[in-house]
Image 1 (tube, rainbow, N blue to C red):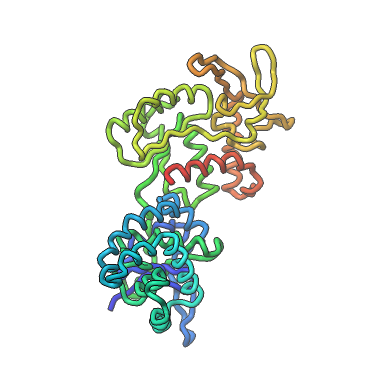
Image 2: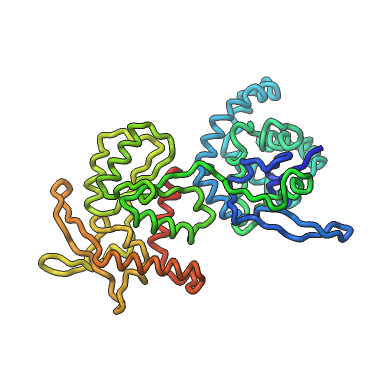
Length: 411
């Protein structure tokens, strides 16, 4: 008969797999989501439940990074709707053209949410679905009719669309209408009880295809990586940061350009984010890509503009004054938090102006005491990890903007 692992939100099983913990069930989880709970059968006998748990909010973030966005859901619907043509012709015969036109993403997605909300609240009841089908007009309420029929008996479609579309696109739509705090549970207790998994079985690899992030240097990668691990631990495993120590790679604006050009020439298919500083030198360097055709799997980005840089103290050859240093002198240090950038007197560590770059008519700036600023930030990270400093006590505002830019790079 077999055993099942079920992916559940509320009272509805979104997905399941038989006799194994299928990879497609794991994409929204990581190893920290594993939960083993004591529970009791109706007769009072004790047993253990083996699960992975996450929230709807975290699941949506994971799915968006993986490309299961609402925008892409519409694109996929339009691509796969044509596969329903034969079924619609059989079902609607003379009314085929009208039915095909009425069955649109806008109406279908709204009905998916409506039907799914009922399933989440009440669970699936096939007798109730059959009664609803009898009272649903094939023409006037085509979306609901197709979805209910799919739920009743069609094992080749998911909420009315072919499984080849990938059910996660539909699930992403469903999750949009569910509370962010609601739990999504992957329960594989049946697999353990059925002997398919040992109770102490550990899964190490949840999603193997990582987005590669390349920066101008080792410090940038280290800082962003550590920040991501603290701020969004459930998203950390989707990214790989270039290890300058292992590869013995050199870091600089010029070398980052060199690596990206080499990857483009080699036809590397992995998703890559090339992250430059937001300073004059970087903007000058990026001009070298102007006449190149950049493949869609490579994104060339600069650190984003941030509020603290709009009015920042600078040191010049003739006078010292505050200036907007976005695009001129914003390196990773400017993203480490105001509490890190301020000295003992509460004053921001200034930026010093360096050389003038003729090609873009801008001065290049660099923060002073760079090493000390970095070490101060790494000390904050250590304090947060050993729980001597609450993470919320640190200023993450600039880093939050940077991470959101990274998350949205391929959406």
